[in-house]
Length: 578
Image (cartoon, rainbow, N blue to C red):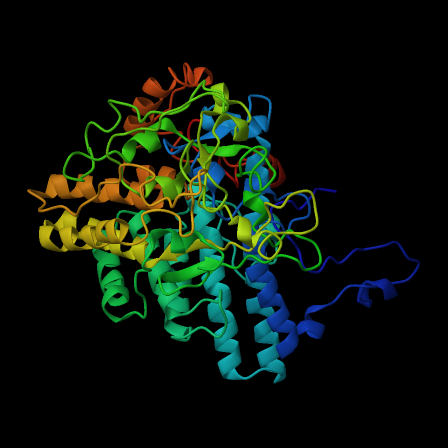
């Protein structure tokens, strides 16, 4: 019997041998059928399950960090933002991705595929059972509309991720009854473009969702509008994204938080800048709801999280935060000179931090020696790094919790305290502003692009340069932990400069958030940027020697071979180059 591995079936009907036909009409024991779920409580439970799959864990041992909602594996360590980290032997599948030597047999891909299509299936269950409930009179027309709108929003989210990761995934809606007949090709063998289906899901959600969400984490019109804009931006359809972005900026209920790092704290969950985010929670039965996909991404030992030294920021990313004497980025020369690090320096030995001017967002994005690491004191350097020679001297910080939150905002059971209540922010106002700045730069509207970029730079300059409450090891306040110099641009001289400045700002604002690889792909510069990155980084990280990003292939990941084996290569066609 073939394993139905690309979809999670809510109700499995087994046929058993019998000397009569009576078994054909019996419900399997212990199975909840759709008719039993066709009530308000039943449909709501199915919808909660559809939201619950965002964490990637619903597929029973097939979803862990490979299915993290942050996409740190697929969007960060495969970019110039981060190394896999830890050491050479740990999680070799992640090493394959970082070095672009992954294949359709790399196990991470099947795990992510299963988790995403589990989500799609759960959404389809909601839509199908809601229709049954409506017909039975157990829910109202208004409830039906709400359930379907939320399910289509979530299906759009899962399919968007399937599209940007796997390139040519099948689109499966609630009308599908034979899952073995759904592939990514037409009868003539042409690849089916799923973008129109994803757009339709978000547009339907936008039409029918409420303006104000009923609970944190649920979708609403603003989230659907922002996600639909994101879909168009990913396709390079800036003109269609523009009015959606304008509506959010001009009419939405969102404001920038005063401090940049407010967007990455447990206390800052669901704040006024947030448009849609995954809801993490801890200290309930089990601990997997605590953003389990990111539990590896803490200092190796001695600090927060207790594990595991993955997702270490690259030297290239750190260098990007250098500024010139006027507080502006070094757009073309940032990587010519490295920010001083403690590479090769024991934590017990003296070390002098970099003295050149830096964008303060660096120390909200990267943990580096001698700089306060939230309220944990100064980052000690090598003692917190598993293998400095392999993974570099830096630690991630955006997903890290404050020491004062340990126990209340972190798991108190399980093998790691890295399971936290820190949400994953999928879309916030900062994203919308910089997408709109991209549109403006493309149109030659330099004033709008300048204004939007500068709002974020001014926030970085004026709002909380260092960790609130952070102190140096000697007990002094950390206001001047580094030579922070950041200022707004005086002007954008032309459209080409504006485009470069906007793209650079996107990196500074969202570094280490699992977006960078997909941004480089949508801009059409992935091969150039990443091969240039590797050319220098291999002198720092020897394992990157000989690594090459292949244009026309590595912009997407392979469709898992397991899925092709199940459906057949005629129905499910592999991506070019794999």
